[in-house]
Image 1 (cartoon, helix red, strand yellow):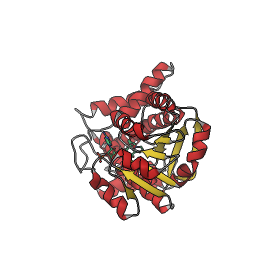
Image 2 (cartoon, helix red, strand yellow; image 1 turned 90 degrees about the vertical axis):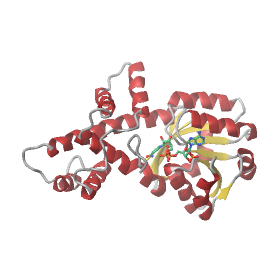
Image 3 (cartoon, rainbow, N blue to C red; image 1 turned 45 degrees about the vertical axis):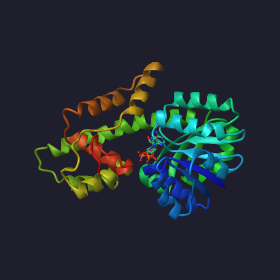
Image 4 (spheres, rainbow, N blue to C red; image 1 turned 30 degrees about the horizontal axis):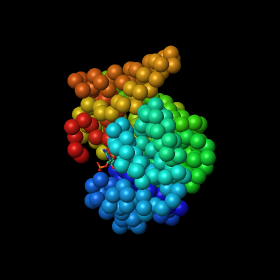
Length: 300
Ligand SMILES: NC(=O)c1ccc[n+]([C@@H]2O[C@H](COP(=O)([O-])OP(=O)(O)OC[C@H]3O[C@@H](n4cnc5c(N)ncnc54)[C@H](OP(=O)(O)O)[C@@H]3O)[C@@H](O)[C@H]2O)c1
């Protein structure tokens, strides 16, 4: 199957590579041609413009977008639009706000182009080795694009969530859970670090990750970060991100449901700009561990 891929950053580059490995014919396009080179070396075909990209994809195009949320997604769709035709499917795998996805779906439907909003989870490791994918849109478009989701996901790691917006809604709720979990690990390890017992945090992390109730991937990543540097010195503790959590909290408000854990996690992130501490260093270390996310102002 042919697939077009736009957005060859930390996530998209790895996902496109995975599709190549799964024997897809991958056509790529990037505004900075240099970012296509690593994938071309692995077998992808580069394009010189949106038009060239669409011509190379032929009919019934399947185009996967993995760019920064917001204006970048609208910009890419705007660039593609003149060259799209009935039967084409655009899949937005980034962390877009679900209401934006509904709007984009409606706008593309006027051209008889299908739009799938597909939240992707699993961080950088998942992007390369198999992720979790939650898709929204029409069932028929999902079925047509299903081989792509199957290839990108781990076993049992993808599913159709419902009508347009459902995929990104499910991903937004996922991120709300994630914010609270990160904050929770941060608070626990701050308590351990400040304890009167001069605890060996590496030792604590080792037993927490093996057999305990709080074991899991995040605990593994934290143990690995502490193994590298028990003081987490490379992190200032000023935590970045915040968009998806803010949307989740706003949405909870609109739905008249409470989300105190998410609210507290968001507040802690905001306060970390002025008063970072060990708990927020842990959050930064975890965000870097799964997603390669750098703290604000940092370049590596
Ligand atoms: N990192 C994670 O763990 C993770 C997990 C799940 C989902 N996501 C979501 O996946 C998406 C990509 O994340 P990432 O971590 O791969 O980010 P990234 O490394 O910063 O990559 C962003 C990509 O978007 C492109 N881009 C940015 N602005 C653009 C514009 N105006 N027009 C065209 N392309 C533009 C960039 O292209 P240039 O190189 O040309 O700037 C780059 O390819 C985001 O929506 C993110 O929230 C990330």
